[in-house]
Image (tube, rainbow over all chains, first blue to last red; front, side, top):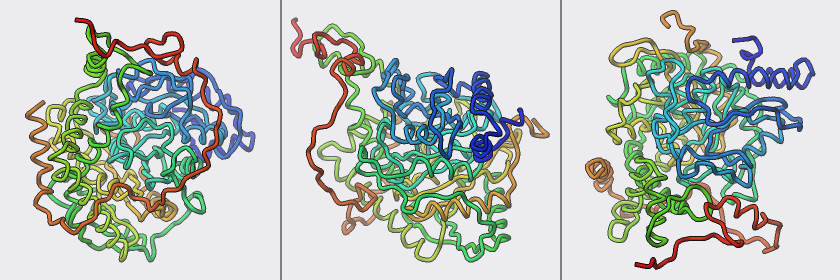
Length: 479
Length: 71
């Protein structure tokens, strides 16, 4: 990898603004790198630069998850039903990046409609993990994570509904941030579960994540649930963790965690103490019910959101012999993949008369209890920390026959989504998978109170410096 | 798929054991109050641009099969 490609986004942006590096040269280098995609990370790649505006991200190419609408550029959300769809408008998050001078480098592969934790649910083929191509990159923002980790993009954006930024970031050894719900506009993000979906950056370091968040956050008249982050975001610079209290949830420290992941997690806790931070256990008694609540609420919202795909106004239509209802049915049968169908059925069932109270009603109450657990924890602590994922990257096909086992990947990330609070995953080390094999990245998750992104990024930065994670795919002694 | 869905619902059923009678449901996590804005017309996309996306546009409209197919 050339010196140009190794440079962090923050450094490249500084050099471009100082006219020490040309936008053309930098873009061309990344366009050529992206063209070497052997991971199926991209669904579309830009041929040329398209942006002239200058700003904090001047000349920075960004890989954009295919869930974001981009005017005139095919946007499929990883689904057959949107094949060939060219939106009439660009998502606010993407527009704000380009207004700050960034270039859309390409659109990245993903689990269909962001439903999945392995990127195996894409209608356009699975994405390979750059650390080990027989393993998954995580999901649903798997293409974005693989592109950044695999040296195919300097940075990327994705979306996180129950862990879809943090888990692939962890499995690919990069930084992934899910901001507070409402920090970034959802306008132009193809909806999965509207009360949970949030956009965020996937980057090589915490500073780059802060840079992208700073550009994207803010209130948007096109999304009435967006509020932005008061005071904005500055680049992190904190060097210690003195005076900060980190909570380890007792309930989430169960047997579900692989020994290698546990080892890296415990070593990271020691590093926090070494930086002056305090560690203590905290009770989050309802967090273990997060998966249950999430897999009612998210499918329920999805079953409503996905009703718009009817083969009438945009996207594909499967012709049928009969009436309009038969046309809807054949379009959806041909256009949606199995996981999407599974979730539409689950969601429709959970909302149906007679089952609503037992499922959706109770799940919404569990959501309240989980949010209250976090609020109580933040009464005495600055952060809650967990492993991001119970395991390192698992093998392709390993969990495709068991949806529940796949859902358990989200065990540590779903509670924060339900509570709407920000959480970041940073690479904390390498560990051997259970069952043996070369070492793979392990993510460390830090969660903070709503809209405390600055404090979260500052702490993550300090910890990142202490960890000094510099392993790269294909550059390991054993690889 | 029936077996898979039953497995998922079996897991979800665990929340049935929790004591939740006095708990208020959460549908939205950010405390926002609904407000109304002035209803002022703004420019929008042209009919032609919108119809270009449609699988079967005809005479400025979306064509669909009849609601009641001839048998």
